[in-house]
Figure (spheres, helix red, strand yellow):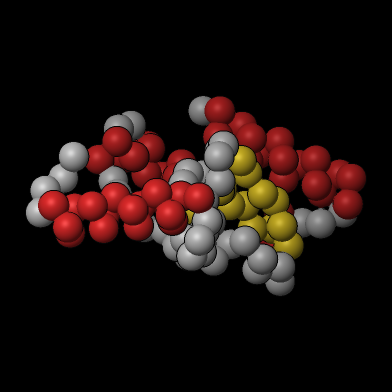
Length: 106
């Protein structure tokens, strides 16, 4: 698959260029809603920036989930953390306030 190839070729390039073994690399993905496009990070294990549970999704987990069920992410709700006062937070907060005031979803 495209994701397996990305994983394999990325790890190979990192080892060839930087001499860092694949068992020293964490590969994780950022996607909506915190980020506006799907992108993959290859970082050393000791670098935890951006890879926290609510922000990063391990590529190996995504591959396994899709191999078990190709429509896994159509069925799955993914929890995430939003900072207050970001544009998306404001939209969600406004919607929830409207629902609370009007007693119905629009």
